Length: 264
Image (cartoon, rainbow, N blue to C red; front, side, top):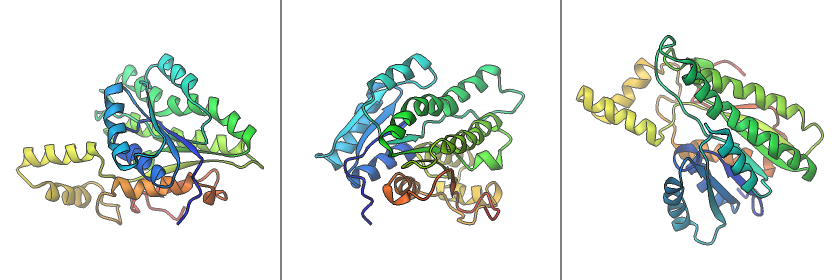
């Protein structure tokens, strides 16, 4: 399917690996120009090398910024050209009990997971409205609804994205701009692979057995009963970044393998 993304420029926060990196690949495949982001230049350079090896003729750039530092975020914003597609993907988490989670832990996750998208959208949305075209996507998580007991702070930030996304969508009425939230489920990112390998080593099991046990014992609500690939998530993100998705606005799109449940 031709998604009509040629000539569009996308910025993806937190995109040197995982879902963000896979999304950069799919956008490049569709002919978009892409600006990736990571916390340091070394990570960006490595990601750019991998992207350019597959798409040597494409327009690919990267800007380093640590989204826990508002000053670095402001410097990043000042470097950005006109952006047609903003994908608020960057996110961090810390697995710990509610009672162990300090104010600093809460603040750090709020800064990166929520305020990154707030600051970028506050700057880029007015320009999209002026040009009468744009896409903003917030990448949330199934944890926004499932709320694991060791990820309460993370889940809170991811739930907040649903509110900011819906609120911003209200500002686009009658315009060619949309704001939506993507809700991935358990996805086989590099971090998930590391987790599976660590558990496999500790419990003297294979990685495949650990993955199967996760869905039998932890994520029992999943209908997919496996981890989604980053490509499966990225392809959906790319579609909702395109002109073909013009009729979807203010929505929460689940790519959760059925784990959240419900009829909406």
